[in-house]
Structures are given as structure tokens and as C-alpha cells.
Image (cartoon, rainbow, N blue to C red):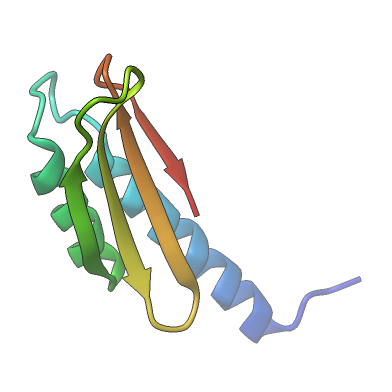
Length: 90
């Protein structure tokens, strides 16, 4: 079954947005960017706005948390573990 052209265009746009989001959160050329800078860059490139970016004190697993809001599609949550690894939920 063929997808209508509009649906295909939306799917491509979502894929590009996800790629930009992932690229923004990753390390660039081996350089570790600050968490807040990566979150702000991801929001800027994908048309979202940073809702919060907080340090988590006293948790043995989580160091930072942030949320990016998207008017029509919801919210992306980014969590940085103590190890520095990022987890994304959208």
C-alpha cells in the first residue's frame, strides 16, 4: 500500500529532526560539550524550547535532567547518568 505524499514528507521530516536531536546530544569530534549546551543546541535545531535543566543532588545514578518542549508533539526528557551517559525519552 502506498503512503500519501504528505505522510511520507512528515515521516522524512521527523527522521531528520530525530537525527539532528541525536547529533546535538552527542559528543562532537571527541570533545565533551557541557550538558546544558547540548540540550540548548538540540532544542534550537529541532524547534523546541528548554523547559528545565537541573542538577540532581543526592541520587546515586542521575546527575542532570532536562526537558525540551514541543508545542504539538510533546516533550523530550534527557537524563545524564553519573557516568556521563545520556538517556533520551520522547
